[in-house]
Length: 211
Image 1 (cartoon, rainbow, N blue to C red):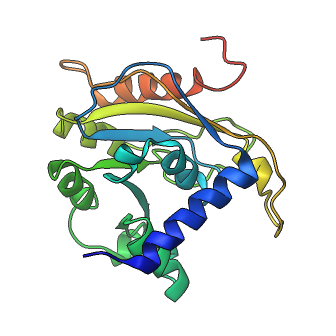
Image 2: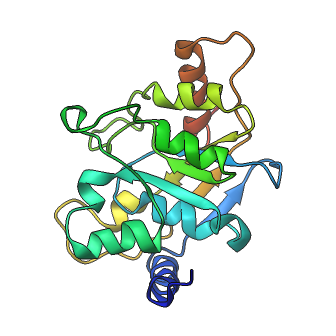
Image 3: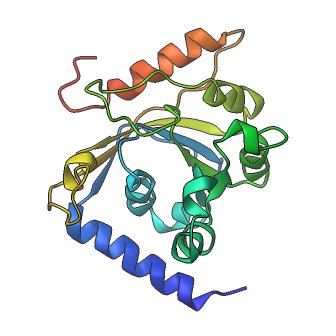
């Protein structure tokens, strides 16, 4: 069913993201066109998924859903409108005491339906001086259980400086979203090994990386 209000909001939101950040996407490898994908990226801002979503070609954007915290995107009518109707986010409650069942189940259902996901394996926004926080195990379990999905490392650069903590007005700066080569789980590969490879693959996409 069409949703004109959501469609207009999508156009305005992606247009604003491009105007403020000049965001551009850089693809380092060819990726199977028809397979669902798991884009896993670094996380420093509530706007991170918007930049990834914005630079995707339209035919991919239509079937790509960000994974986001229900506690944030269900807080108030405006956030609920954007989270559910504009971005069609897969909302996950990050509070263990308030959720029941497997938190990865909604993500698994989306992949099984042929949809792609944008997720942030650090689990929370990085407010430290480190370039990347330790990765959570959900990325490994989701990727191992869904070999039909293509895991794609992503690096988002500069968005944390466009909207510094405590500022209300964005600072226009050029942002980039870099997509790396697919990173499937290897045969017999354990969690620690895969998460280490995933972390190194993400860091290798950052500007100034030596590997």
